[in-house]
Length: 90
Image (cartoon, rainbow, N blue to C red; front, side):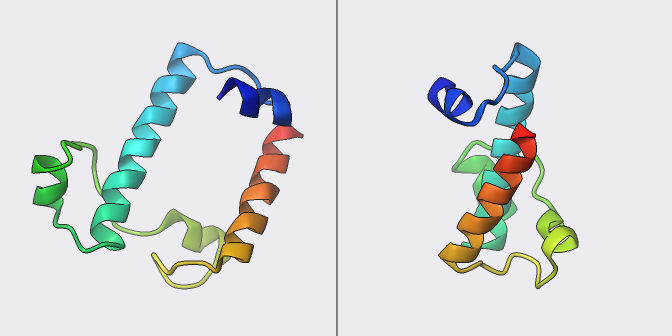
């Protein structure tokens, strides 16, 4: 994480921002397991041990349009990621 922060000029994480990131990552993992791979919410809790909620709608649809949970082609995902990363660095 430190190397990524240095490379893109991002601020160091505080304990609060680290905890927020871990929560977001857990919610994303639970949601991906249910919405993209077909696991049940019960399986996510019992097998993966994730107790955070599964999102009901795709928050990126409001930003980019499209259909909830629709996969993006790799070039589109890469371009959107870099755009968001650059916005953080500004």
